[in-house]
Image (cartoon, rainbow, N blue to C red; front, side, top):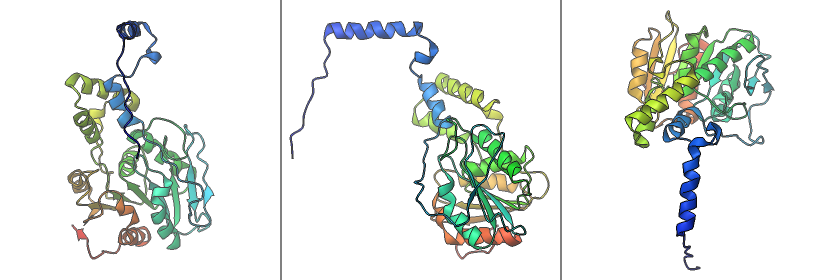
Length: 303
């Protein structure tokens, strides 16, 4: 093994003065040349997802086709399986923050094998969709656009994490699926802001500046953004793992308590993302898609 190579990073007095002179000039530079503030970087953690794109060679169910979503900007990458099954239940899926269609592929395969028509899309700034900025309202707008592009009633909407939150937000703007399944929903979309502020140790002023920047992106105040169950008694199914460290289960149960048609299905040991790979969860969703009931697996706690 080679030795440790050390470098002398000391600066001469002249170089130090040069750097001070450079930074003293920054207030006179255009805004787009200024370095981002801590508040701006914090807001970007809420608004700018890390993009993950699955290799095109990964397997997917046969018969998938591109679904065009006209009139929506940025471009949305949407896929449709089983379009020829006119009488089959139509299922629309929405992935989580920093996710993509591929994350839902095991569910997609299980649903298509069971005979359903299945549609999934990459949210704005995710996967192969366009854009750089995303939030729950942008995802909700994408849900509405995809549903409109389908031109047929959606029998079951399935969302995971922030995708589930987006499904609920879209319902407030006219999205009307026959029933909805929420997988580990981020029921309080303001909660991540508190987590970001805590992790970065933001001051009160910095957190206020971060929230103003988020408000500007949302087009409305974040503090007033609350998810409400749809009017009426739309059948719903909440599936959440008690050990979820990403989306607090208590918030999801609070949302479910005010949803008259919601059935609660609590599991253990699946965390946040492993729900998508659990066959018992898939079977439950298949049952819910075809008869609105859903099989009860052995590790469930329904209430």
